Amino acid sequence: MIDPNRANTEPAETGEEEFWRQDKPAGRSNGNGRARKTVDLDPENLRRGMGQLVLTLVKLVQELLERQALRRMEAGSLTDEEIERLGRTFKALHAEMADLKKHYGLTDDQLNLDLGPLGKLF
Image 1: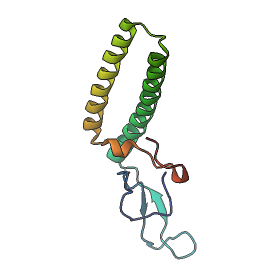
Image 2 (image 1 turned 90 degrees about the vertical axis):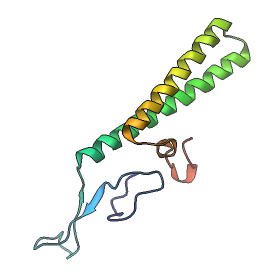
Image 3 (image 1 turned 90 degrees about the horizontal axis):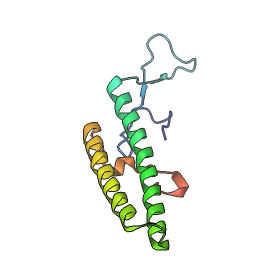
C-alpha cells in the first residue's frame, strides 16, 4: 500500500517503487512551512507499477484455479484427459508469467503483497 507520509525513504521490501516525492519549499508551501508531497508521475514507474498490479491479480487467480483443480482431482470429478489439459494449461500460464515478470523486471516476492496484520498474500 502506498503511504503518502513516506517521502524520500527507501522502497519497501516488496520492491515497490517510490511513488511519492517531496518538493522543497521554494517560496510556496502548504501553509505550514513544510515541503509539499506530490505524486511522482514518472511514466516508467507507472508502467512498472501497473504491470506489478496486473501480474499480482493474475497470480492470485492462478493460485485459486490451481487449488480448485486439485480439489476436483482429489474428488475424482475430472477425467484423465481433463487433468492432462489442466496440466498443460497451468504449465503454459507459468511460462507466460515468467516472461511477463522478466519483461517488467519483477520477482515473485514483489508480487506477494503485504496485507498488514493478515500477513503476505501468497
